[in-house]
Amino acid sequence: LKLPLCRACQHVTMKVKVVRKRKDAAAASSSAPKPAETADAAKPLIRRQEARRKAKAKEPLSVAERQARNKRLAKQFQEEQLRSSFGRSRDYEAEGQKKDLIPEEFREDPQEVAPTRRKVNKLEDNVQSLSKKPDIQMSDLLLKVLNNMKKK
Figure 1 (tube, rainbow, N blue to C red):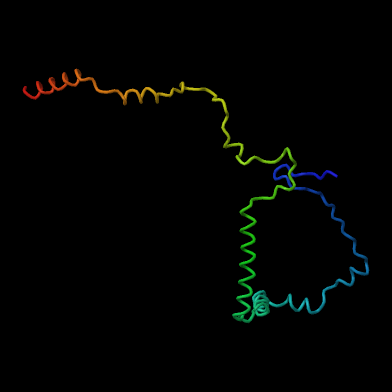
Figure 2 (cartoon, rainbow, N blue to C red):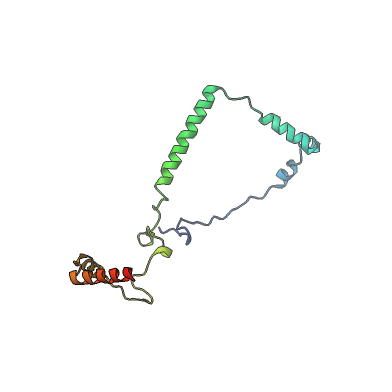
């Protein structure tokens, strides 16, 4: 059994046809509005909203109830954080369709498109020039030139 997969996110997609039953003539006549419904609809909107608010109004929770609620919410939050740290589920992906860890737009080509310069390593040249001992005759000559410049 091969299930169809969504192209964008690779989850299983299935089309479901919704079939609605027709109402019988007897059922249609019994669906006439009841007097309580019409009386409620006649009230202004503000009064209906106030009635809903009063029905929803609850007494404040006791300390034990708040602690139980907070423990439940903390446990739920902890589980969500743990699940999100593992990333998305890859159970339904086919073997060939598994995504790489590096997205396609961040990958680099192994070959350069148009190399602009040659890559040269000058480490050995730099080490040789730094490890050379200064020439004694050259240093004497430089000292004489500097002394002559000071005298003028």
